[in-house]
Image 1 (cartoon, rainbow, N blue to C red):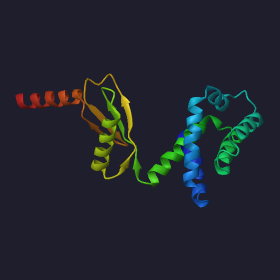
Image 2: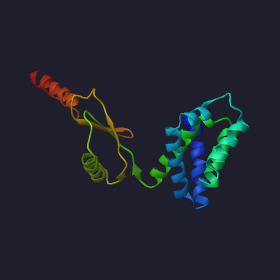
Image 3: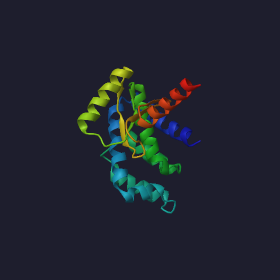
Image 4: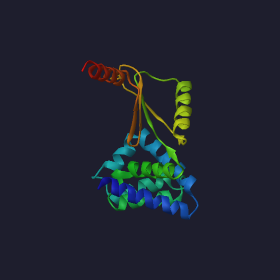
Length: 180
């Protein structure tokens, strides 16, 4: 249910931004608003609080963003509030950005490594992923201390597991089949 709701709102925003030829502006708005939400505990609380009146929320959001973002994006924020869906604001904005990336053929693989990576290493990994997939990528990098070494790459339903743990599992399996 939740993903359908997010898809409907982000899809409607995407469609309207295409019709008004404002896709890049709306994308910039969404990214900027997400940054503001992530940086502000008060704004997160505003979107999540069932105690604050809808009209007060609308007034605060209008004062905060009017003239700084497109009317289309502001109207989406106000619509979410009016419909009692403001707690989904960040997900809807991310949904719009994901939809835009998908339409532009951009993938977002999750690269997990045992150690922190330098910017140079991240750039090389991005180039290798782009070459491997034939697509433009925006990798998301995570560190997992549970990995003994190596890495994993998750792209939608596919996983490339180059972790030491996986290599040891394969070696163990190979030794068992050879001994039988």
